[in-house]
Image (cartoon, rainbow, N blue to C red; front, top):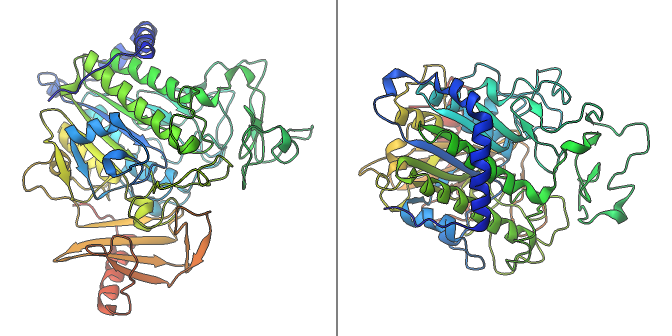
Length: 536
């Protein structure tokens, strides 16, 4: 079944921009096309678009039960595709989830995969087998557009903001990129195209540091009264666009963007990429930033929800999805494209700015019936909306199979006919049949979930009539237990055991009742944690 396309005035402008930009990038596209494997030339492989939302909770969409907000474009994917009720990301913060999504490896195996700082070096080393590098072997054109937050530059040096920003996405399998280099509550507010800061004036060099420069430097502490969005904790250093951020930077004024324009720019660039590569298979990683703080949606979305800036940002994300799917329709590619919609972690309300997210929450429950949210390994931190959509190939419906973003390297390379090297993507499972909704398809029967730095791990295991979930809190603390409250830590036992079959909200700790299950799952978790991989 084909989705119903639509064409807004904004979309017409975007398409026009895409056509013009294709002419500029035609040489690059031709060079990339020369790599296409002759083995796949006779039969076109499907295009793949992964749309990864940022800080989107299980209950944030109307197709997942939200009643205080409507998300018709994402709902269209859910009604025409497969809506997973047990779809996961691998971590409850962004950098480790994105690392695992691209590499197929649990982030806790690699030191330094926690939330990346503004001057952080590339976390994924050049030459690492990744989802884009696997698809490129099959002849795909590959691109990432949007939030990166996986570091740039050499280890021990970090980004050369005024020179060549390498290594980065192009050294791990992407043909091209247009990036928000870190995350928008961290400096700097510039775009990176491929290896350089876009529109950077050499006469006004960009400086990024961990400490304020010696000259007077405006911050959210020294000039708090000038801010148009106040900070609640942490985010009180360099001011840009009336909002203070984490970190310090100066210069690069011609390269700086306006926060409100991020989503439009991502959509513009993504449509350009699809237009340029409409005659060959392509892989697009559309890496949204909409719900992440600071939440500053475009003016046309402000006030359109009753949930404040966070709700308005959900509407902006929904618009982005609609523009991408409409572009595929216009290009005649909808039935040749697999779309996977997911999120990098669960929801959070007050994440450093006073933006009304808590005050205007009302009856909305961002995590739905789940406990916890961003930063925690309770279900609300890692179980998120997860939808696969491919007209004519994915039967519409609902699935309770367990799938995870870490499985996309193995599953999508399987779709493209590219075998995994034995040492690569060691925690990525081939759940392609489950993603496509094939009869009798099975997802995972075990999954490790982690917090930001991996000092809290969760292992959920399906066996017999149980969906066991063991949480190991090495520091005996949990963060963000109730997402509808201000962030705080709470003491918990070192081990907690839940049966998700009848306790989705993880309210009844069964560790004392079933010590033999705790021991068995502890041993399995240790095997996965210290072993050489867990994929099948």
